[in-house]
Length: 328
Length: 281
Image (cartoon, rainbow over all chains, first blue to last red; front, side, top):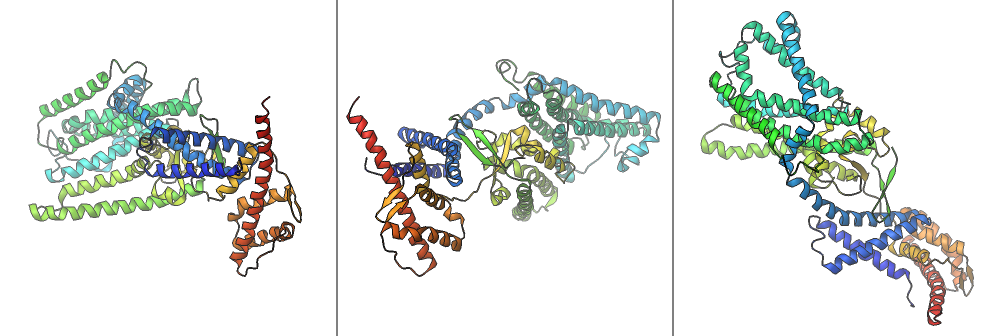
């Protein structure tokens, strides 16, 4: 052994750096492209780099050396473990994503119950308040509905078919935005979610009460029915997703609040994504079907069909073999 | 919030990550907002240009479908920009790239679409009251690893990715190799005298950090270290004129001395091992 030992290590560092640089560029399938011996080499190099890092740090090497080794170790860590994490994650989520929404709703049905009580409760209370005390209408009902003259007996708005796409896309994006707000505000310990639900419920109740006083109830419900079933269910579910996060803050159980939030995060997100899908459907109906000239019975039929489909999906999808042992 | 955090890998190596501060994250966000506006304008332009042939072909106006598309594009860009870009590019957006930041999972691995969706769909809470990001900012400041609310649920951290490559592989590897062999450095004996261990350590320290100094300072330091050693080494100092040449001469001289010292102390160590191997028991 005549050669200077540091040279071997130098060589190893250089090779490892070159390999990680190369693999970083082909980030999609970096490790699959390697042959078995190349992979084993990489692993060996990585292990000695991490050993070098630990040694350098504990023996008080100059900061530059530690930095350098740390960077190499991080690059190796990302390449070696990132690949493993990616494959396992994809397999577990891809097959059950569609079922996961229904399962999450069923598992956390209390959250749906709570947000429904708040939303519909506020609506009913305000509805009867306005009926008993019509002056309230001037405070609670938005200006554009105060002197509203419904287009038809069966239909509040008669949007011309040309501008229906605009209505649909506006309604969709607005509703999804509200649902994202109700979801995110769960992190304010649920306070924001509660206020969004109550506020929207009051809004609905006030308009319904006002129209009842004016004798336009039929037009209002005729308008709401085709899309309303799904839309109102979706808004309650968005609130429920927010309450899942709030629950992790109020009663985290055996783990820390931080861990509880992380654990519930996946279910809450699945719910919110499901809500967005529901709102796209509802928005299409609200833009194209609700303002059309169809009669009252057809409107009831649309309501019944859409609600049956969504409720049976939520009640049945993913039951059975996946139900056990999943933690959403 | 701390400046950096340590993550423990399965190999029990502690990886250190420098955490991104409030300021750089805020700036990155501003840059991203600019990109959002650009993307919006870009997509709308494409929409208009794409609609022109349709309009002339069918005799239709830009019409309600066009406006509906504009509204949808607006919505998708506003909410999808961070989600899609961060998810696809593993935690990097243009703003973060510019500021040298990256979103990382807590276990040090790159993020995917799940983490990206959680941390970005929860922006509503962090931005409260909109658009100030006051809540997120306060939480980030109080959290030891600088997480905003979305980061907590997603299990992500934001790190600074770029630090300059300050050390030569040669000096670094030599240091670790020497320590690994478990022997300490010995004074280097040369024709004109000895170079002490302290001096050698100083040379090593200097060579491991020299690239961080401005060039004039670097040259002065190298010269002040090298000048007394030329005589001890018994070699002639070649005359150079320019600053760079003098620096190069002194640094390569110092490196040579260090290599020599390393080689010498290693040789004694290896001879010892060889002997014990040949004598069997």
